[in-house]
Amino acid sequence: MKQYNPTTPSRRHLTVVDYGVLSRVQPLKALTKRLKNHAGRNHSGRISVRHQGGGNKIIYRLVDFKGGKIGVPAVVETIEYDPYRTAFISRVLYKDGERRYILAPNGLKIGSEIMTSPDAVLTVGNRTLLKRIPIGTFVHNVEISPGGGGKIARSAGTSLEIVANEAGYTQLKMPSGEIRKVLWDCYASVGQVSNLEHNLVVVGKAGRSRALGIRPTVRGSAMNPRDHPYGGGEGRQKRGTKRPKTKWGKITGGRKTRKKKKWSNKMIVKRRK
Image (cartoon, rainbow, N blue to C red; front, side, top):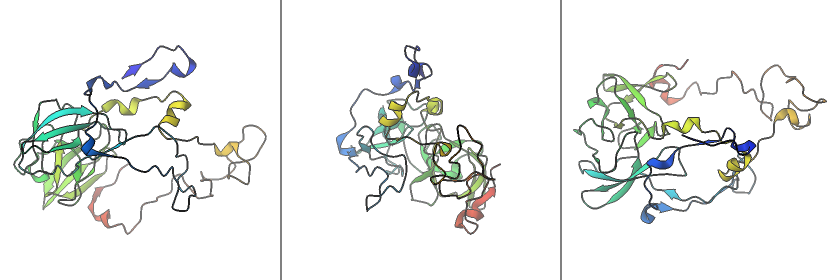
């Protein structure tokens, strides 16, 4: 983590991730594409998601979350920055000559050999079936359905702990404390996702937020009464409503939003606290 001397007010607490560990290379053109920026607008041009728009131009990297080539060893060529995600990515060269991007786990080194296989060695970066991984091991990029590609634990610094393997299911402990079952024929990558210090970043100034494509958020208490349940009053006012509410008057604090009939409820062994 890099910290700066307080040469200006906005630099006083500003911190950025130290990118010294990354390879000094351009992204591989064959594995990139430009995505259209919708700036939070829907098909008719109206804002459907607030606080989005602007920002620097960014190119999408085609990341292989399946770990594709089963049984084909690959060598790690680079560790790179990805503007579309919080974690770092790695470019790997397979033995048959194909290159792909994968999520980079913490501790993966350039030149390391990795493999996706049902009988892969349990080292950082290798990908194998959940039923083969011992209890207490930390994994990431975990599939929910066999062959569906990694869906859980893909953001920076995330990992899941394997708690049990029984009756065709693996029990995984989430960062929230929730324990849920996943079919043990699903693939998972060994290790923790890279860029552990991402949660320590202090943006520091408004301009940096705008460069990330985040537009300003106006406080409800600063609005008029017609615009927000918290609006109105001379100077700083109390909330004035019994429960926290959204701009549209919907209860937002302490209200359960999960559907009672959601299909995956039966997969949850223990709810988060």
